[in-house]
Length: 330
Image (cartoon, rainbow, N blue to C red):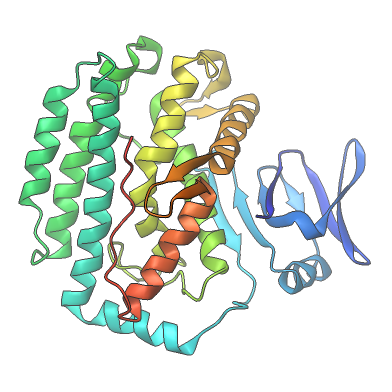
């Protein structure tokens, strides 16, 4: 697997012959092209047409973030695994409302079951979240593949509301009290962590989609509209509980992230640079960590798991095997 490069400093990034370098206050730093899969730009970084052409020829995706809403957008090189056949299958599964509902249902179901397993994990460790789990099970029972997608999303929203209400009981830390979900901008520390973590996951999945035949512009739970990408948002629903939320619980539980890692502005609370670096370090460690995949009988990294999920979606779209979302067993 290729690496993710994160650039926090201001400066410029350029191509020099068959390599690239970042030039900032501390001088030039050359980057090993053969190891790079994606570049995440957190600072004010200028570039050139030659550099973008070089990224295209080397299949390097660039994601841009800012210090307010976090994810801004991506430079997505022309699709090197383009497949007209796959795009037609994606479009067919979107335009056929029954087929679209099925995939939307599966993404919500996968998310809910992983949420339940996260809550069960903490319930078994003495956290008072049993009632939350019961309520989510009841909400999941109401979910039906024949529903309008708007109705499904309403149930999904209720599931998340019940789930988020358990965070304070899991963490028992008043500094990171949840209150309510707020996104743009996040209004407290917990919301800031969730927004930043979700943004990282969206970009990781987008980069993984680039290495498949799938088109990220065609989603099923999230409507295909004027937004540039939607399929990565769909797939992220399955992995948010077991990747992002578990990272957040660990960072707070081990006091790796504290109040000093946030900046409070007039209308928002945001991670500072040190806080973002701590989160990213744990995020990358999580993606590279491996676990025993019971169905495969071998160790799989979380990043590889995301790619495998995309392959399952491809098989579903080609009518080879019905899609079943990954559900954690821990």
